[in-house]
Image: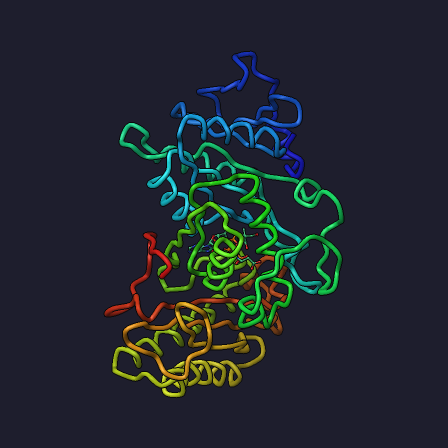
Length: 399
Ligand SMILES: Nc1ncnc2c1ncn2[C@@H]1O[C@H](COP(=O)(O)OP(=O)(O)OP(=O)(O)O)[C@@H](O)[C@H]1O
Ligand SMILES: CC(C)(CO)[C@@H](O)C(=O)[O-]
Ligand code: BAL
């Protein structure tokens, strides 16, 4: 059964197919079909006989994973929290280029949300995500040696946390993976339980899927460091791959949370990348000292804050800077001077504050622009020569 499927998914359910153990159904509109009890559901696209299976339960997923292992077929795994966008699709494409099978998980992991964060309102639309994945599937040409999207894993919270209910309390009980000190700085300083939750759920997912390769986006760069450290320290047998940040045409990094931004806040949100690119310009112009580099970011953000403050309350979109950071590309320790041979990770986070005086007819974001939205972004200074271009995919190895 698909547990967290909306009623829309249930409405689309059709009877169990009679054609074989795995019940692959072809040439039908996108539908969800309940197969073996508690386990298999099959999606099939209308135009091509391409399909993937959706699993909510762990045992049948393990079974097909074992089948692939016995056949010597590799699995590339893309963990997500759903609300899928082109950033996710770039990772899936990359995984299909490098593996026989791609497995995607969709699970909004409660333990990485702080008590006052947006777990309840986090955008969720499983039928829409499955539809997007079915459309993406048609791109993968197995005859040309590409892998295929084989499996989507949509576990219930009770399967992922089988004993104690998941907690968001800093001192809550449960079985957790903690990676320190990496998890305590930057994003971890603002979100104290965030990386404990991420490391814990990624450990669970890797234990379930056991992929040859696992794919993460550079947008969440600190997450890639935490996961890589976990993989090394716990001797997990998987390779961590990192895909470039995919951006909107104006440079804003794609993010599931961008749906919270109505037009007023969306217009100002590009300030984060503008601030980071001003540092990049300073770097390319020969600056190497932290204070000189980060001064450029502060100048851009201060000017933008001033502009917004001077607008009328019904026009402005105010924001706060959470941090700008210049960190070592191996350890994420803050740097006082950048070594040109090694480069640096330049990252930042801003908080878009709730919109004041919303106007009739103004385009509002999800939740009516009433909540603070944190945006993060980063640039690898050692990888940006000579100038950052909006990215449409591609990947790099973490060094
Ligand atoms: N713009 C992007 N480019 C490349 N990868 C991305 C992008 N956005 C997210 N990812 C990656 O997709 C994976 C799943 O991320 P997730 O489902 O949390 O989406 P998200 O857009 O990062 O959501 P959120 O708004 O919660 O940050 C992560 O590895 C993440 O880094
Ligand atoms: C890696 C992840 C899927 C763990 O919940 C999440 O942090 C994300 O989507 O970036
Ligand atoms: N992609 C990061 C997930 C989160 O912010 O919770």
